[in-house]
Length: 175
Image (cartoon, rainbow, N blue to C red):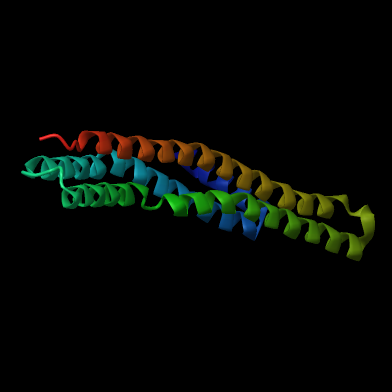
């Protein structure tokens, strides 16, 4: 139980070093990861069921060659694609937001350094170091969040394309 308390204190100290911007970055990264986990779970459960239902509906059709049947097929594939892509643009936006928030943390930390320099001159190294810390920690956190998100959103996007193509191939026009 002590390790949990130590971990909590370490995270709290880290968050205090990074300032308020680091809290916003942490919220963005947490939200991004929750959406990523939700997508992975959905792809293993709900999307598989949706693909099965679409295949069963298509296979139950007596006629599959007419123009109307092809529009129904296209609508089914479109519905599947929309369901698979849900939340992906939000994840991509959060990934893009991470480095921008890190940059904002850099700017706010450097403003703090300049404030210290204006008030006390360059002789107060400890106060300047606190500002530099507030400048670099959010930058690092934003980059780490963006890198992890870019990797996983690429995996998700490829999975969506592969699953949509697979469904298109399975919905044949033959009868």
